[in-house]
Length: 112
Length: 113
Figure (spheres, rainbow over the protein chains, first blue to last red):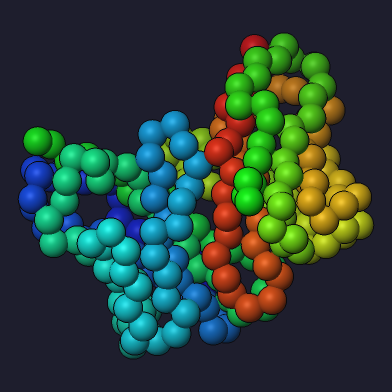
């Protein structure tokens, strides 16, 4: 079945460090892929998305490329800030299907 | 647009009490869903709806009822609360066609004593 696997956290980095959070997926159809961010005490917000292979989603300095050959959608940021501390969720939605699949979430802690 | 709204923000119940978590959206989305979020377990789908009058079970439906009488509203009912239902509950919505993102409400933090 369809599923998303992302690296376990927590991930602890110093400010200005490079960030990678790995996400891989399995899907039977043509998925769109998403990264959501959840700040403490808040709901999930869409961070970026990609709807087809080789698309790159980007927002607020974060990037992720839809790699069909490796079934991956890794999240990257060149220089993290303390304000990036949050939980990040990888997710997929298969075209015209009624289910939305989330990874288990990766907590990022950025130290000053 | 207010997006997805949820009430209440916090709630404390005693075991056996009933309550309804409210969810509304003003984006005319056909698809609405309820998730619970527990520490270390990510988001788990409780129930979802693809339109008024149509609901279906998700991954963890036991102990919860839903109905969808209008496009805008999708309430979640706990008929007899149990401590295992202590969690943070999120409502979400999206358009039905395609593979678009979901929009989430701010959540309801529920504690069952």
